[in-house]
Length: 142
Image 1 (cartoon, rainbow, N blue to C red):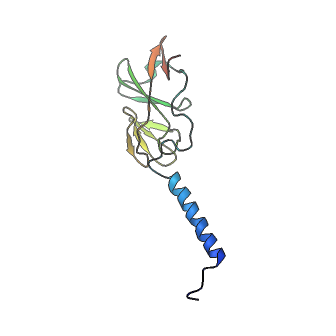
Image 2: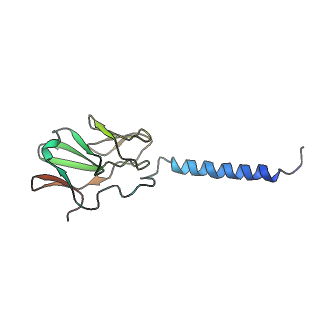
Image 3: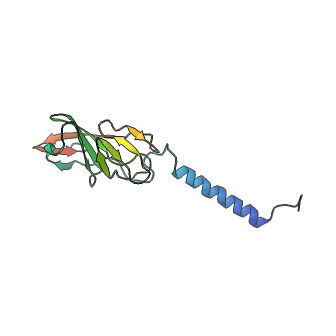
């Protein structure tokens, strides 16, 4: 009936839907940097093995260590966190220097860390990487 106040149940349903919609918008924001995930980079040195495993001009994903390493020239290495900057999922594959996030489909250039396909917009954070004792080591120095 026109002019009658809305029933309490109708008002409560509307308030609940607004709250849920707000949570969904916050969770899916493209401005999110790492969502609910832990630290994006190794907090201690991580041994990645032989540097020769990364082809010159290519990249290799170290999923367990959450690091992706590229080799722009012989003996030179660049590393980035392999944790998506949108929702915090770890990249699941690298093909032709493009890292893919399995959760929402973001892509990253593994030679620069740049987000190339959304929803992620922030680049992958750089990770220190070096060769020590013939092994590739990522993360801060001990």
